[in-house]
Image (cartoon, rainbow over all chains, first blue to last red; front, side, top):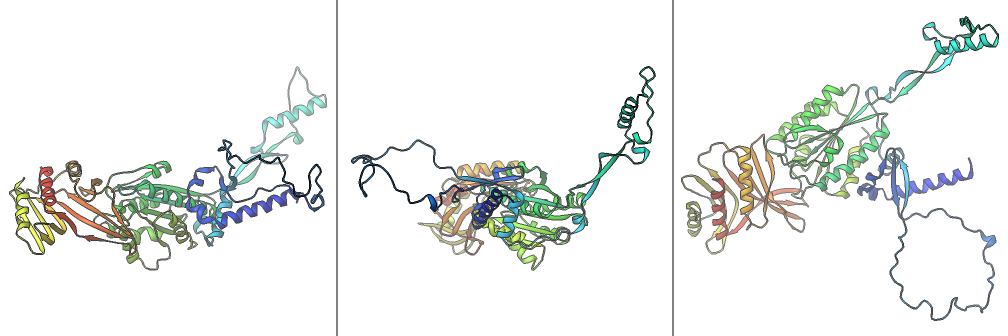
Length: 366
Length: 158
């Protein structure tokens, strides 16, 4: 290893340590989510010193030259007494470091002491696909590369002066024949699906959705580090539920009433139709302010007990506090399900609650 | 002043006891779950239930329009109301205070539900952040404000 590489590694360790010590702050503030570009996340680190050259002892302690006695202030008297005007130069920039999402997930796992997930189903099987990438001199006739074989035979005939331009017959011999060869290419196989469900009824404001967005980012980052492929599905609901894309998920506000069971029914339908539990690791994460209407709570409990929980690795319910406080749905679930290993409940009062909520959801290692 | 608001004023003037206070005319009925009443000061009640006697079903659009009319008129309560949720499946509309009152760790707001039968239920809700619970707390209105409230219900429900 070259010296620069060990220095770089040491710097990365310092960065990791800094992020880990301030992890709660980074999780709580959502601005870094906007800085994700592909696989990299840009993180501002305000209190870290950039490596710099320093002179060793050998060159230190020199003797100055010039007029004046020891102790005489440098500069002319009277200078520098006027108060300075406001500066117009740009301030000191924050140092931004780039981390891969995998590194970020690792820091999250270490910071929250998250257990690694034991996948089920086809989680350990990586699909392989044969791709013709090379040429060999042996192989079945069905894989003979006609063009390359012809060229090689032509080159041989020209070189041995047996090629007749007036009678351009090229006859390949055994040594001319070339065949396609293949290599198995491992393909990442989607083996985990995360269904995000969110209440977008009138009582859920933009602040609540921001909390959901931040939490979903970290949960996604962790799950993606644990599986070869993760598929995400987004469902919004008020009194009725529908599947939407990610942008719509975070930016929709409806004025309908809240019927949580509509989202559970749709999630269950999607699981049954497209993600059979025997092959998929299923995560259902629902966020609402808990203001469910009417007798819907009973139906929700029955859907969870009979359909969703038996099929899911984890069902997480995060209740975010709206301007009207927090609804009763959290308590209903608490009373209906005691010590269910794949059910995680979390009350998120504000952004500061995101850290503990993530730990509650992912701390089960499921 | 409508017949119903005059009747409620008379009923409050008669120093009613704690309990249900119901008045009606030929079209509507108002029921207050009284805690206390004083003709000089006003009333304190757990909830106000307004009911249209014809009970013909209203569409959700009708309820929403009713909610918006009420929200524009009920400006004398502690907080102005807004139509928050419109449930097309259950044919109900919910109004709440636009901005709840916050006092220390407690939130207080009005909640008004309009049903397809033409019924309306007004409550004041308290959410305690310490205990994480919601409960109904008494609404307190001056005598004149109560008359105006009843007047507004009858005027907008038409």
